[in-house]
Amino acid sequence: MVAAIELEVEIEALRQEMYQLYKNDPSDPQLVTVSQILDQLLNKLMLQS
Image 1 (cartoon, one colour):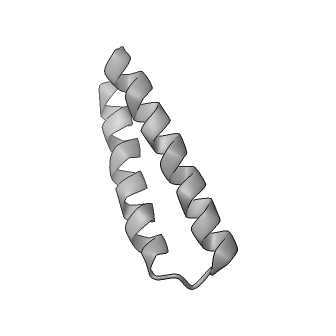
Image 2: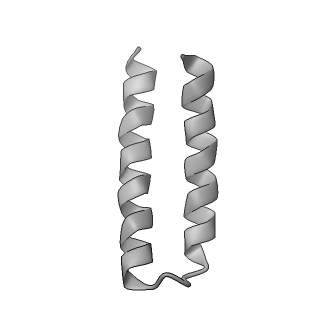
């Protein structure tokens, strides 16, 4: 259970980072990287459920 909570915290931090990147520059290529990492973490969370 602790791992899922830590994963949720990490996911939320990445969402915030992605939002800030988009807000600063919607064409920032780093957005794709952050989005891909976020997708991986979301998939991992789904597999734990």
